[in-house]
Length: 420
Image 1 (cartoon, rainbow, N blue to C red):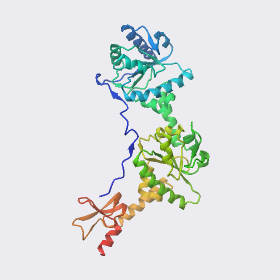
Image 2: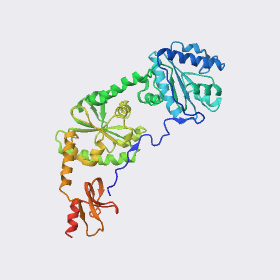
Image 3: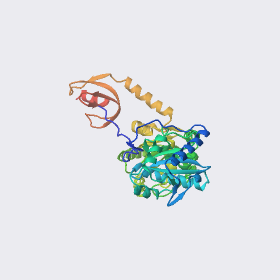
Image 4: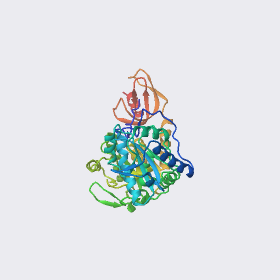
């Protein structure tokens, strides 16, 4: 029976879920403001709730300020807590976003609604936030969570028309785009998604790799290669990390294939570029030490953008970009494992040729055979990878197999056995 490839490793395998359910609240539909007048109504509703609870001020650090300070601004509510690990992970990202938007003079104000267990936790957590906060009050927490249908934290609720709902994953949207996500509307999300799609399909390598980046890639020895020099080559964007065992395993396989391709192509028309998720610079250097190809510098922000643009959720992943600059395949890992260097230049035409050759090979083989050393009839099967039980070498594509006994033979070994 054919053995399976190693499963890709989730980028979040060692992290907690993106949100933590607040068990004291039942799950309810999440309602967002629609037209602009409704957004203004939600702001008024917030002020009415604060007034009904006797809240006459908001907190700005240690100071008390009037809620009127929010007049003329877009208000967003942050439901969060110091005991919640995903909240503590999200807060620094939101601080960076908030500070960036303040420098741009955007009319935004965030109000922290604490779900901490006590006032001391609330005050400690508030020290990490540059925005406003509602005073610590468990009754106020409950009423605001009911009003805005919050059943998990962190939750970020913009009081605006056309705002992105919880179901649309506003937290993930902010994590992906940072300050560019402002003003957190569906229209803005559509604009950013369209920009990503254009980078993915329109064929400009400089826009894909150099946007907001350093405009060069590096070798393991520290040499710099301008991205402009890679135009016209087939590019493999290799998403991986040193901490991931499947990545290290695929690195060895890809290195062998890379060397074979480079040896047989005079113009060296292939280049692989590491897009790292290493946790620190030390790991990054260990990762590229055994790689014969290039890498995006560890500090280059374009790495995060590439993970988002190609929607990479697991590693290792190999995205192939053709010589024309357009995405040829987002399953480069599968092509390399299946066809090796024969898949180059990874075009649709080349893959079709290889698939046709495999089909032709199968058509020329018997549908089943008998092995004098095995009690069952062996059936012809298409397998991605297996180990032959006669020669003990790895095989691919066609195998004569017995599923009941987990027994596999190379087609060529069947003939050898019959001659023994």
